[in-house]
Length: 162
Image (cartoon, rainbow, N blue to C red):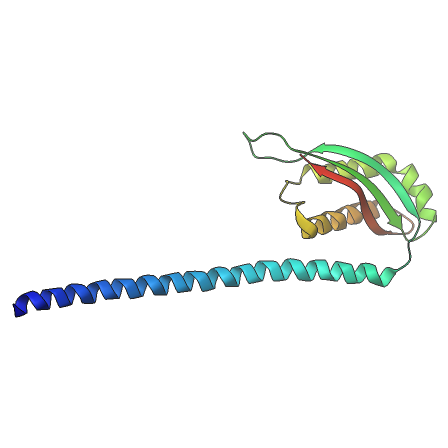
């Protein structure tokens, strides 16, 4: 009888160890995923907050130039259905002199916008942070084309992804 009881006690001890390890593993996984989620969302929220503060500082609205409407295929992995983006762009400039230069360089600007949009995936332009990254990239590319003045902001008049 005592031998039987000792086997039952050993089995109970082994089962208890397995249960404790499983609970500890679940707790570690939950804490780890909560930490990763915190890191991901804290980065995107600070990026968006910084942009909002930057726009609030400006207050004034400068001269604008209508770049136009674009319908561009997005980059998709092989075998997936094609996706495209339809967007309208308006750029705000720091100096009125830039407007005539933007009009002269319209083909170059359109080429730069199309080239940038074609390298993006749907995930790249999702959410406020993705839109802000795209806005900064477009602003930098267009600013590089200008001799006088600078791009103050890029505005999307429409944005549809299908």
